[in-house]
Length: 113
Length: 112
Image (cartoon, rainbow over all chains, first blue to last red; front, side, top):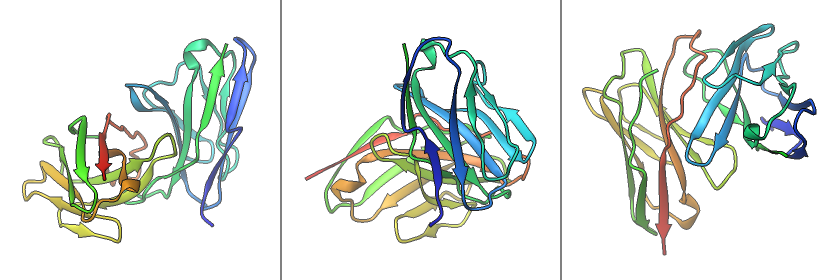
């Protein structure tokens, strides 16, 4: 079954404690992306990757890092989380052409105390 | 990518057609119109997309105006399970177009 998986699904942490949210897809997609969703602000893109070792900033990259060492994985790293990063996070992937649809993961709900 | 404008919310009676409009007046020739929906806080789900011709699939129909400045998503027989936030986005088919912008979407409430 084609899918995008994220782990963990729920996470409570404290300010400053580094964390990683993993994202993996089994569709051999070139493109992967991270979004955050906050009430009243819709989905905002954090980072995206067009292929292995190729990443670029989205609209709200501050406070986040990503890496793309393998095609299937695209982890989101918060080196020093702060309460304003409390949010619902989604990973997505699609094929390389612009016609491809995006497949979204189930989401990770993060609370930073 | 072109910006889109959608109504904040709409209601629809169960069993009736739901028509969700989207304005994308600055769309350029190489941009597709995509529709996604998000049920509660689940990951958004693809519905349909098109370039200039009307499209239909098992979920919905997409009507794009001739000047491509607006489109309408039609759910022909809305059910309670179609209650969701519907996003209209436009995206270039340029393979280097990695940025993707979702607006606020339309909250569709299907009522019994």
